[in-house]
Image 1 (cartoon, each protein chain N blue to C red):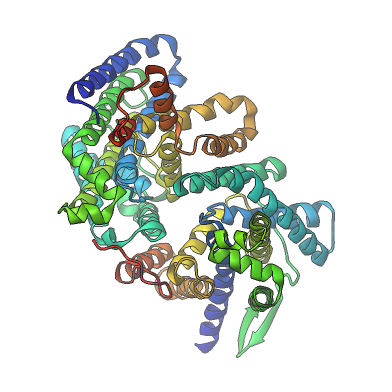
Image 2: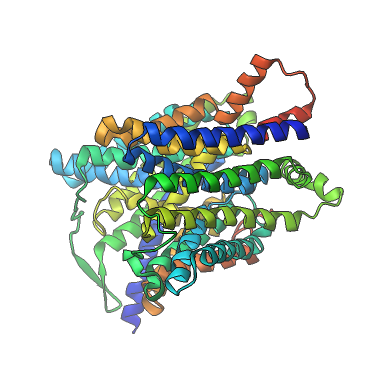
Length: 293
Length: 326
């Protein structure tokens, strides 16, 4: 009984960690430039394709070099995204900017099919099907890797935000871009760096989930939605909120799928989310900002 | 502010254009392109409906795909239970409208992203139920051999039917924008507190907008059944809701003409880009980004500005903005 519970909780937390990484990308971009980048889930998919399809399958790089190379390429892609998608629409109304990111999402989903074909790719990952035994339960090593990476990334990110000048510039830009620019921060450069960092986080998430699922062009849609839901659950724009929102959503999905119904799990998870919104419109950690009906 | 006479002239012009389309298109277009136009008209109805809540009311709704599906499934199920087509059609549209009210009421307090997610969650739940309630909906296979009005697959007569429905939907949207109610709705979109201060019942209007968009979506769903004769859940999947959002935004938020332009381009441009073969959706995504970068306010706003420059509009007061909203 406890074995099963441990398994469910760890697999839920691992999926939640992936949502959290993507949700962080949403949050950072939202805080910096005030748009929701709905292509973030497809950036996850792109990262998985670059790492698995190009670097591992085509060039036969060792896994760790494949990961490193992918992160570099994703950073470049993030800068390109800032220059070619965000920058041209920066003065457009918010909703138009969102639709531009949907255009990007369409480009990415169909672009990878052009390059890698319609067949999904499989990836064994660093551990293959290896398991470890924890409290008597067999756990995929990959789940533990995902959780370890999330913890590591959060510590590194917190360090970067607190102790490096670029991290401080990122926080300043997120708080008030106008004031940051007046203080001599090159906000355009910082925004490009934020996009690069968000794309790296998404690529990392793609690399981490690739061994759990096939790498396919439509894997981004549901990840986008779940990560967006995680942001809302935690209160939009809050970094700890995105983290906890992601983990909570992962747990709900994992436990709900087993104990209630795997067919109806999305109905349950999003029904619950709908209910949370109705009774607490600002999310769990958000500032109250509701509208009088 | 559009005068009553101009409204009338505009509506008469719309009727003339519609009749001209009905007369000319079947002569010049093959059977395939007539079908494309039929699909386009259904998209126009959906975009007009979404524009009601999103453009006029400023409330982000990502539920349009759900209302589309609810209308289609309700019609197909009612007809399968022996209801005559007109009764089933009215029943399906009413059902969709009631669900619009049931969605609009609880989300009254939400705004921005929170409203976007709540409505998206609704779309996701509806699309999952279409797949999972297979006793009722035929599951992933959908429903086949829907009798409709006996015109399924018959693209030319369906063109006339769809043109008529689209014309009514378009006129409804234009008249609504012109009516005092339309002005009140735009008032609360532009300044909620001021609108409440002058005593507008914002709550009822918001629910009404959701009902209106659901009625349009439901009508589009019924038309889809008539056109195709079969339905499957992937047509109404939650991801498709973003296409309707793109149509309205690219066309121009808050403009009935814009919704028509947006839906038309969204359906036709992929057809024109088909020579690019597999690359065409990549190009299409790029086109969407470029259009938004060049004309952030949407194509209808651009058209209205050009028209103004050409005709040297006399009125310069702030109210003239609302002419874009015709």
